[in-house]
Length: 502
Image 1 (cartoon, rainbow, N blue to C red):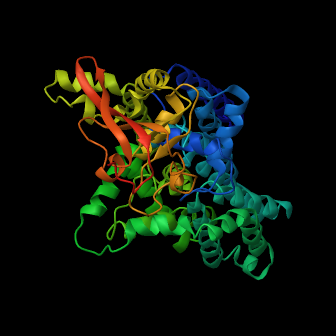
Image 2 (cartoon, one colour):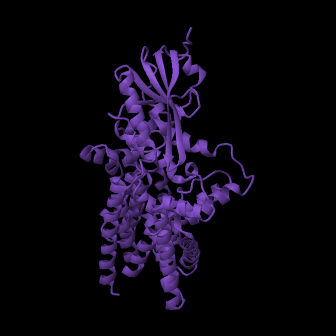
């Protein structure tokens, strides 16, 4: 196939995938994930910063829900658009570095990974991060190629927007300078002002969020630091739980291909001075290596290293196509990775059918333990709470729960999208809800308290009301299997925390 042929084929598949994702988020039977509902709740109170995360995810959700309404489709629309943007950047970066064939195969294999499939239809902080990560690298490549000085400034703006999406993109700063130090061709850039302006521009774009963190006592640093505090090298468990799932989010053959690409890309880039491979390697390995080492000391979530795979996909395809293997072997390896990835994504999009299949094979997984259990029942719970709220009177009743997931989902699915409060008796800031105005001023109001089935409110909370009773039990079923269950308490006459009922 010619260069133009690969490019046309890419556009046909990219547009087709885009339309499929749009159709999926319109027809999906799944409710908003707790994180999606949480970020949607952020979008109702626009700010330059939020607890533990920067603001782009809330801004994007706010844009589309204000245009289209508070519907799951518009909450998730940003993920679909960022996914398309990431595909465009991936293809054209591969094409610029090598050719359209490498760009096409990198795009195809990347989009056939479960991790990117999820990120294409669920709106979290990762879809905008992946887009700005790739865009920044593409603009840096253009800038380093000597094409127009303006690419440096555009790269700096892209870096800043990436920092406003997820702070992980800060890893591109050391990646760039390590690459320049190792590259004989590009080392002279270290003596020029442009790479430093790139960093300064990115930090200027981020500066309002830095100010927000400063006046709020740096929650963006304290929250992730708390995840690794007090850890030490004691076992391989956390490493295994980090590296093992990587094969899941990439699919097994693609994961092995990526590791091979990193090894060969680093070796050939450093020893044989292949600047293209060197560029890709150093924009992937520092982030991946950091979390690989950290995983020996602490729990690392499976998606933390995901941006490193952006250039690693191109690297993996490039070392295969430009390697010394026979052409038939190259094709078999790439096609096998693609087909296994497609099969993995197909199972992901039909996960409930997979559970039925495993049950038929004698490996029954309880519905409540299946991953989709976190995406079902929220709409039903919202309807139940809506009815109760109408019965007891909306004007003098507030909704409250101890769990962040419950709070955000109820805020979205209860009719009228009321403010829902979180009960946090620890005194520590644990979510964005603890930074907003709480329920302490609702003296004389009644409350609906939602909790797990058969779990009563804490005594210190219950004692702050004149009367409290369980008025509804909500059970969510998948077929005949219980998936989730809740208890709803009606609390009358709030007296203020610390005011025990006589």
